[in-house]
Length: 242
Image 1: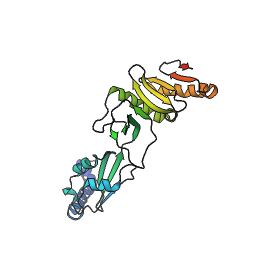
Image 2 (image 1 turned 90 degrees about the vertical axis):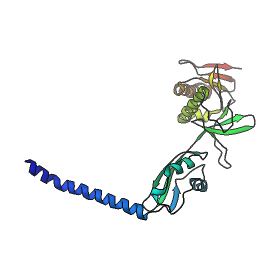
Image 3 (image 1 turned 120 degrees about the horizontal axis):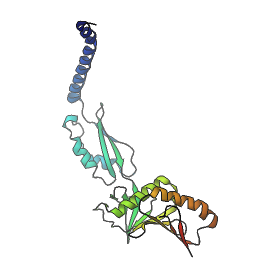
Image 4 (image 1 turned 60 degrees about the vertical axis):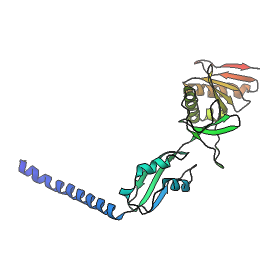
């Protein structure tokens, strides 16, 4: 095929591309000239009320999309206690849709009479009326909402709780958690408050060992006489009984 014939065969494709680009430009011109923000919609949320999002977003209805600073809108919304992230999208009909991901409590911090939730990032979350969560109690940390938990000890507890939640069995069989400098992560079982020592790291294996121990020993022997189950070791589970 000659060069001239090759160029001729490409002409329809080039024409189509130019037409699409022209349509896109006309659509953008129409958008900027005619579309205004007329509504705010949010996905279903567990902890954050729609009216609170709307009030905090403070989007003036009737504003043109190119006059709306979406970055500022997101920054305002993400200051709400339970909002982890928010992603905006303006639909062709002028609806501003916010897709919000909420923070999820993984434990209830206990400090004297004070209580507050905490999520996997160490962010403290207020207890909302009518929206309590069935999560383990966590001792040994401040409950002031002004700071975020970032210590190595909390990271160990966080990793344990997240793995226990995935595991399911571990999550359902523990009631309280704390961190000890010597023993690492320590939990109390729902049944009889038996002390369970999980140590540091490798929690997936240790939770599997706890599950196996429970199924093989506790189910046959019972848990009444047990006071401590040490799961820190690779090939053995050490117990202390009355």
